[in-house]
Length: 213
Image (cartoon, rainbow, N blue to C red; front, side, top):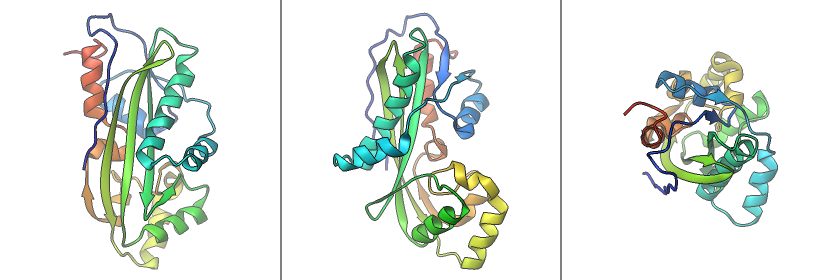
């Protein structure tokens, strides 16, 4: 299932501007690069864990939290680069009402995968673009995934094969690699599951002459 919430205030006739990705995710950078989009990588300096907890305490849902974090990242970088288009993105995974974050270490990755094993979960992905310290566009996607009931022996093998990559992804899996073997069903946009709703973003960038129409 997919939910979209988008708005834009910038003119599509405006000249091309510098493009910045406010993220340390190599997956998002790779998606842009593979699509032929050149962007400066400038991770935003925010305390994601504290902000996520604060938004949870305020009663915000997973989709709201993902969008809020994406906007905070873009706005933080936009403050110092007012003339650039700044992309912010974030993901929030929720299973049975519990929000999951990137695991701190292999032990946390193992515990998280055990908690997700055999169950469906929702992955909320949000992307936004900021210009001159204001969000001018945003888009959100919801994917529904179900992990298979894999054995503890397979879990050990998966963690050994995946290595440190499990620490850089929400839910400790990367669907484009060996993490695909954890699943029995996936419903949703593939690019969004990898971390970036690429097609809507490319459409926005074409409208702003960042990529060729």
